[in-house]
Image (tube, rainbow, N blue to C red):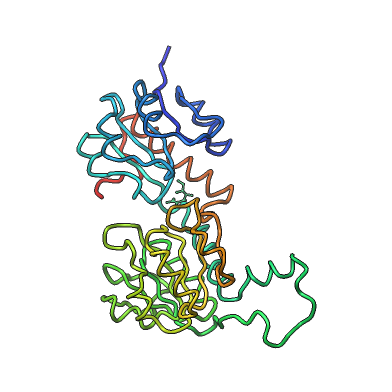
Length: 323
Ligand code: 8YV
């Protein structure tokens, strides 16, 4: 009898993904999808060969040091891996994979939804309507920020940033970006590269955050950067909450320096800073960037393609080799 590798699966992933997991692995599952803390992950991993986790689990140095030697691979159901201490994983010789590409389009769609939803006061106007508060059309009611022709500054011009840029060009927005390096990508020949934060911030009529969270990008949006952006800018975040300092953004939304914000992610999620809830100029979503059936299945299958490759002794298609 061939024994299947033993896989700890920390979340109850979509049904088609779970079916494939159970077919190929001797799976330790979390059918009720309860939050697993470090103690539980460590306990359950003691007889696991690999771990399939999500970005909701902090795979930190302490956890990694407690993993048994038999754990040889971690596959994360996410493109971002800021929840994982990558040097600690790699220094133990554990292989790591993530899920790039397959969530690019779904996430870029949500960035545009946030951009338009924020700019056009979608939250406040829909809420007023649903609460029975819309009694007549008024010339000065629910006035938003015009999108067509404006400058969109994209922070992080990777796959998702580029997909946001392409979509925004359809709204005749002028694309500017701040990135480690200039990007040569088809269809984005007119996008303007800004090597420095100083040249980038003043062109951000709109700002879309599409970079990974790192020591460099944490709190990129703070009092100082907001002060250098045009008045009545619109800020969109579909990347990681901590790229924005919530307190600074809340102050700027209150003062009107920032006209509106569209956030799919925020610091300390799922707990939303209660001060945000006082604001009509916030369009907020519960981290649904990748939440389509097609995308979540593709993410799960990508994790499994990587795990299957590892156990078959093949190269991992999406290996994370450095922080
Ligand atoms: C997920 C994400 O919803 O891939 C990422 O980095 O943020 C989202 O697609 C989430 O992280 C699930 O692990």
